[in-house]
Length: 297
Image (cartoon, rainbow, N blue to C red; front, side, top):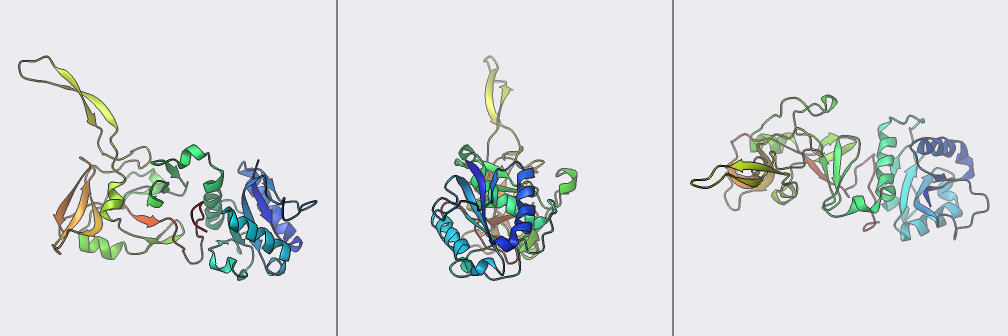
């Protein structure tokens, strides 16, 4: 089975050839030559479909028919090669904004396209509940919650592999500072709710020798600290992290979660705590992409 099928107008062939070559260099198998194709068999053997929208393709009935079939089968990834508005109903979908892309594989818009393609091409085992996926842009997707997390705590330098000082903030300062933050091409990063932050609690066990009174020493399983998957979220501080959730009816308190123990607790909002930002993965971001999956169009 091919990884990618590209639907486009013949007038855009040179641009599509550039894209197909780049995707092939990533290791993907790409089908993009339209010879001997019909709408019915266009992408039966492909995991996802890229519809290239340009001034010519928006008037192409063949491109629109392929896009409709791909949308119905929930494997469509719309791509803008020019500054156009796709026809309805495709205009309602978020599109990969590659109208300024010139073939640079390090370009942020191209990297976002790869991120969307990985959703369809990575092995199904990676999509099982509780599995994380590293998007290679210092973000982590949790497919069990459909959330996207920043890989590092605020204050850490991603170029230094997450090393550096993890900064702490009062709750009010954190809420103001990290409201709709821009990072990795998205501008809707925020503080997590208490339930969202709880979803990151993880116990990587170790055996520890415990001394007991009048008994032989015994081995006991304990959680490594911090209580988070430190391979996925490296150099996480074993301290409390703020959430956006106010503690019940006490406006002066907010929920936090302590990654030393994995327990949540209420804290006065003028206390200091660390911050890890999150975004809702299915949200649409102006100028960038809307990630598509098998449960949403």
